[in-house]
Length: 270
Ligand code: 5RP
Image (tube, rainbow, N blue to C red; front, side, top):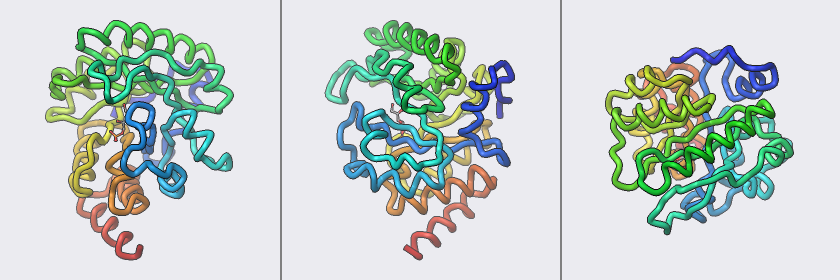
């Protein structure tokens, strides 16, 4: 696990640490931002239902400003990671060719603890734009003491292996992210060890619950500081139980067997 960056002003540090569990030093972001390029994603048709009460068992909530305004109870006492990049939909061949879509003042108004931006490394069309726009967004975020969660986006046809992911993850840290969200892969230690900043993993496409817990366990064992999961939670048979099982794994260092048994137990109780 990478140490937290000590070179932060108090405000930045306070926002940054707000997403971590003080005891375990780890984090679980609940990602429900998919609609900004995928529309009404399975499991997110009713955003209010998808968010509450699952988010109670997470450490932070990652979403768009539209979802925040329309579906989140302002009494929520969880830090927000606000999606500030966009530009293309899932229908576009040039996937995730994104730019800065939400100015930093809006992130401040919405009380964001983090801002999140996707960077596409290795594609002919979107690489340069997303890198330059990401860098502009980092400048804005740093000015206001808001940490940037850099999201490694993987383009169609690119290999999600340790070679590619360590290159992209390292670049995103070099460009100024305070935390990087990337994908899990075989040999993930290399991705973590060569990153300049702590790393969390995205869940990716829905898989069986036990497999998703196993992937999270492997990532933590390889040095990830937490997870930023969406589909494997909100598309689970019981999302609230799945989030609690993840918390057992991440914060109590539970085994996959323990976490999965806990999931089954909670699911049976309904
Ligand atoms: C899209 C995102 C999503 O938030 C991310 O992929 C996490 O969700 P999932 O666990 O479903 O992959 O950043 O670019």
